[in-house]
Length: 311
Image: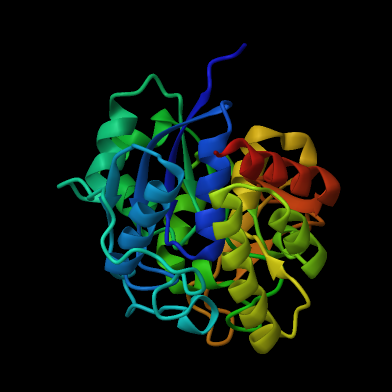
């Protein structure tokens, strides 16, 4: 058996971030080196608290480091309308988790871990890209040592503005740094993550799995599905962030295209847009593998197996 792939999960939990963490921790193809948090769905103190809560629920003991509390340039923006005031509204969560964040900034932990590695660490950011970009700017020596960056963000359409997806829109300057870094990228934007919608049938299936983690995920999904119906009139809750981890476990679940992706940082109406050159009209060198298709049955089977693996 091959050695597990080493990953740092950079996140802003967030319902779908929590499910992504649960999927990653359940699979022996991945080794979680650390969890780093960033302001995004809610403020960074809340995303850190939520990451620690999830670690408690699943019994995961890895370093958790709090990171950037605002974007590189702009003012902080959050998504309470989707994730609630806590960022994980729905389940009853303990106020004080048993674990604590380490006394090190996320950016410094990313730098330390990557520099000490054999070039075999993959970064998996599922929130704004602030921590990743700041690490690259602070210590450029990490850039050639990052194996791959697997990103949830972007799309050929937007969900926060007509042109921009939330994670990229929050910190487009950071996204520009990452997308122009030359590091191998796999990108899961709205084009593919909206295909991963947990419907009532999906939630019912998970509800039949007799584990406390499955019960927690069902409670998350009931709330998430409700807000997606209210805000976007969706019939299901897109589990955006879990697409990144599912890809690392089983790439065959996804159809990917090797394309050029550029980040718009100056447009009046298109700030934060990921300009995805699906038809190769620019002639610019491809810099990312971009998700366009998802095998839903395999995706949900993978998640169901993960939930059943917890005791």
